[in-house]
Length: 83
Image (tube, rainbow, N blue to C red; front, side, top):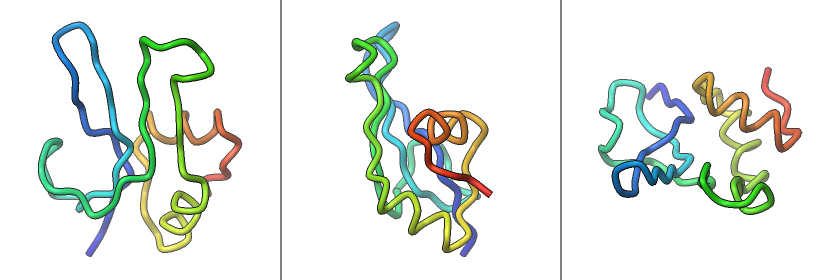
């Protein structure tokens, strides 16, 4: 199974809230996830915007999970190396 690290959208209109999740590449955005590794809340204060479980992120990256472009930039903000 090929997996991807990507965002799953929650929240109300004009108040987005995203979970950073591991999903099958062929799954729709709001379908079932394999694992959740964090969240991104762009409207919150800078220190509360991004929370990522670094251990899980590194585990899934070592297993070959491919991050989306947006998740790649979020991982770089947390200094998690993406190959």
